Length: 187
Image (tube, rainbow, N blue to C red; front, side):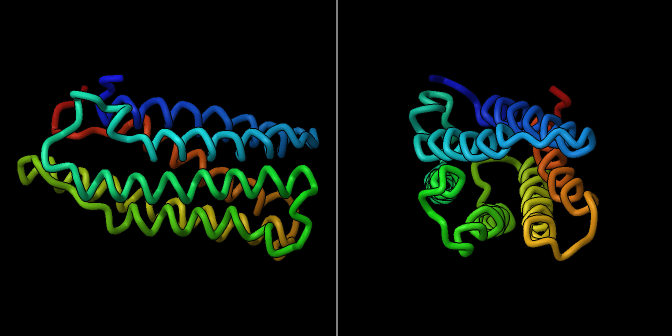
């Protein structure tokens, strides 16, 4: 497909941002819709599949010395796809045990953990430091989203604040993906 990593992050960022805004609208308007729950499961599955097929997506635009990054993207993709599928089955009532409700926060922690340790290679030191900082910020925000999800879904916090908190973290992740840069240039 010849997409640069920056373009892939932009596309994912737009998707996470749009879904997060729809989720926030649903929360603040008291409009209870499971469509955003299904949307999250579908987004996880699609973004997961994209990450599994990382090399095919990049084509000749793949950065040099990309083996470790590819491996990490494939692990992240597998986690996201599995979590999305598990959430979809839970929403359809196929996976009924309460433990399946933990698939989303466990997946967010796994994804965040890989971002915290994400490898970078094939670039100058300044660009590498920028990318390390961005990936660590991704990781932190996703772990915060996981904690907020647990508070919201298991009603460990009162009112809609917990719902808004974890979705706001997901929104921040989406916006950070949109702003992602691989060098010091603005665009």
